[in-house]
Image 1 (cartoon, protein in one colour):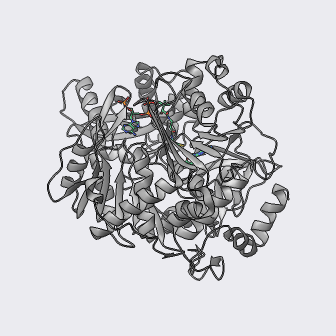
Image 2 (cartoon, rainbow, N blue to C red; image 1 turned 90 degrees about the vertical axis):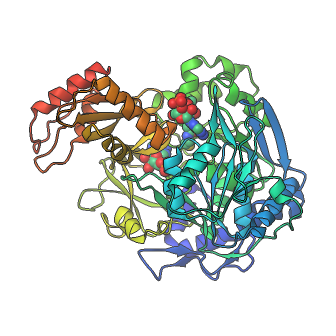
Image 3 (tube, protein in one colour; image 1 turned 30 degrees about the vertical axis):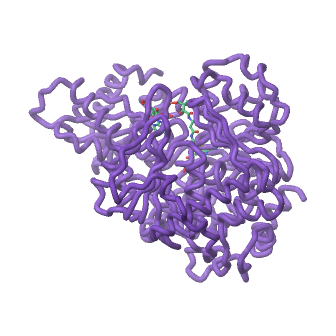
Length: 630
Ligand code: COA
Ligand code: AMP
């Protein structure tokens, strides 16, 4: 079957198409149908099934004779260590951890927060929750205590599983003090924590609240897989919205299994026994779908990589991992390739390794710029496939289905809509636009299986954020166009979300923190173009009347405040003091115009601007920071 046939069938006969895909999953009790539209525009898939994610990701492969195959390879250039875990070992470790969690009272539906670095134990913690039907919420290690506290208060976890430390080049990330501070700051208190003590830093445990990973499992009864209903949340993953309150994206169990399984064969061309590597972090959606669940559901070997594209120890690390572990499909973010390209423009490191097993490179997380794609195509000699998706969808909205057929690559486009996604470009009034015209990208409801059914504890926010602007559609928050051949082009965000090194961040959240500084009266944060990270946040601060402290001092404090509150991942280092912010007459800050000035792009002074002279002040402030060059 061609891609066109597969896609057409998914749109004209979604019930038949998805029920057929569902056959690849081991059900405790099979779904009677695929789509449940009773609560439209809220949709659910395979709701009446009974199933367990951990069984499908682990146990069934042992039963099928894959017990001795590696399930996980941990490759950690930062600790100079490599180790493997077979499917049988993984099953036993996960069953034991789940048994220990259960012995302490964790049950189906309870939430468990996981705050861990890139070690196999992070996946084991996720799978142990899945085994019990507990709902995990992984928090990225680069977030600080405040962000963790916000998530604790929203998810109200019974337990938190963390490691004693993370390791960044040249610095130990002290997780335990961050965790303690977060628990202190949160209203909700977890019943207990489990701490994986790493040899690089052993953390102090609080008696009766913190339990050490190994001792906590001593003598426990291993847990079996607990069946859950198809609509049961497999996990909640928080992602940035337009305010400081992150959105808790719910991943429904059954749709997640069916959709990820489909993508492994049809998009990534990976079968049981193959090696798949996504060089992301378990704290992001890519890590959930393609470090943990996708490859394991498919019976493949997944790689947990603890390192950076450059500097651990050099720009050849990725190629070494691909060679040594015989990686077949590789997934990374364009920013990682840009970092490598900057250090190794001629691809000299690539030539040092044998990449004969590599069949394709997949890119996502941010717009893939043509120069980076072309560099990778030239030096790797395999298809370089950009694909577009979001935390909300959990798998690709648009991609190039290598496992079905490789469609011609058009550099700058993540190719075509994946099954079940009716992608359209709409004008402001919600009318579909003809090919080639730029507009808001929306997806006609229902979204396919595996995508978010709603937000955790926030159904109204879900409706308002995604379903209200264009009734009958899901609003992606991205803008772009579709060409005559159906190729999708993603050009920009329509909201105040920015993308820094493939990390999705909220400028609104940063503004809330800057505004809490006693000398800051008003502020705005925008994303400015950056050659390496795609975008960088930049803050504009208007100081309170009467503040006569040196500007440099206030800026330094503001930079420290964002790092302390959101975390180093915000990469907030650029700020300037201005007298006023450019606004419309109704008081809306003209952030888009400020971005254009910073990036040196042509723009029209908005007709609604209150005082055009402010734009010159902004331009000169930006010039002092090395921006606003045209
Ligand atoms: N725990 C703690 N801190 C972390 C962290 C983690 N898991 N991950 C990143 N950080 C810190 C970094 O150490 C850095 O701190 P610093 O300000 O003290 O230097 C800060 O957060 C910003 O990190 P980052 O934006 O990643 O920049 P970098 O300079 O460390 O590395 C790249 C630049 C391009 C090499 C890196 O961003 C990269 O590999 N990106 C790939 C992103 C990716 O895979 N995204 C997933 C989407 S698919
Ligand atoms: P996240 O939820 O963190 O995965 O971020 C999702 C957002 O990242 C999308 O809405 C896009 O703005 C951007 N994004 C992800 N993948 C791509 C891509 N391939 N091309 C362009 N933008 C992308």
